[in-house]
Amino acid sequence: MWWEALLWSLLAGVGGTLAGALIPVSVRGRGEKLLSALMAFTAGFMAALVFLDVLPESLDSTGQIWITLLVTLAGAGIVFLAGILLDRKAGEHRHDDSGDLPDLHSAEGKRELYVGFSLMTALILHNIPEGMMIGGLSASGSAWLAAVLIALHNIPEGIAMSAAFYRAGVKRWLGVVIAASTGLALSAGALIGYFVSNISGVLTGICLALSAGAMLYIIFDDMLAEAYARTKCKKVAVLAILGIIAGALILWLAE
Image 1: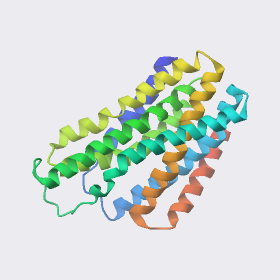
Image 2: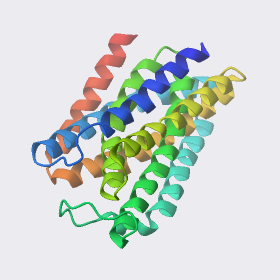
Image 3: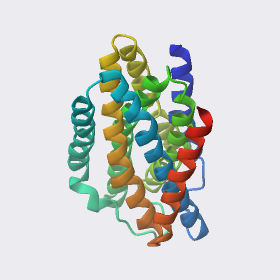
Image 4: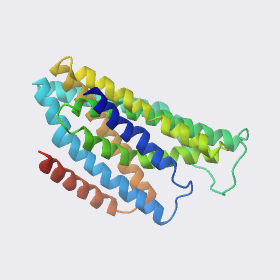
């Protein structure tokens, strides 16, 4: 049912981002390591979901492997191009963590505000294909698993966005509200994926392949890269592999 897709998407989008946004702004030391471990393990888990569930579902729906592969590549390309547009000023997100909150109208405040809105835009763009995946998987019964994994993925994103707005001088509650509201894009994507999947089997496969490509790019370019950047530890690769194994096991048990 469409309301199930909507419910799971709200849990993944608004719930996950809100949970991250409510975590204290300054996360260092063990907190950084925990976030790194969470992102690496979740990235592996989501990779297993994409390769063992989403792409096979897409192939079954389209009946043509070349359609699935080309649309998957297109999904990754869309996120890649969007990332280029957002990363033109990415160097500005490296700031001085002096602990003092800048004035909203100061140069530093404007820089942090730009970072916050850049993160918000990026998360909205990420959430749409993630939501399409939930909507497309609602018929197969795997939507709940995708929702839980995406919610875990959105926790660090919520932390980063809330922290950027807080450092820009925005009131904490407003930063939390802005961060959580980005999850609504995921719900919109879920409804699109659900209704498209009910129109045609081929459209279902295209929708799943598009979201799979977007998720693969997010996994390898965003989640794993961010996990390693936080700690510079090779355990990130081990945790990602463990995530893949755990994902394969849970998908097998869920059959």
